[in-house]
Each structure stands twice: as C-alpha cells, then as structure tokens.
Length: 84
Image (cartoon, rainbow, N blue to C red; front, side, top):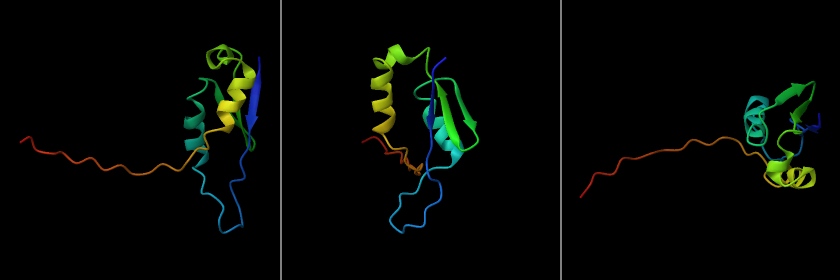
C-alpha cells in the first residue's frame, strides 16, 4: 500500500492567508484522486496504490495534488431563462 499524507495549516494569523475549506470538504476534494481517503490526526491520508497508474505514476499524481489548491465552496445561482 502506498499512502500520501497531505497537511494544511487550517489556522493562520496572516491577514492575506487563503481561506481553506472545512476538513470534510477537503476529504471530498481528495476523493477526486482515490476512493481511499481518511483523516489521521491532522493529515489527510490518500491510499493511492490502486490508482497511481490512472494518473501516470506516483510523481504525476503528486504533481496533480500540488497544482489545484482546494478552494472554498461557492454558491452557484441558476436562473431559468424562458424560451423565446
């Protein structure tokens, strides 16, 4: 089994620090990469042995995890437009 541990600083004193989603939302975000996700203390653990090949190997998967920073969920408004 190959595990990747991700850790974020959920508390920051810097005024310009980005707002991170809740730990639960980060868990849902991680499910985009592997179906085996768990919180262990302060780290989000991803078991990736079965899905590394889907991402082009472990190194490519690590790059994918570094690139998209999970952003807070935003509300989306849908407006129904009447047909002309």
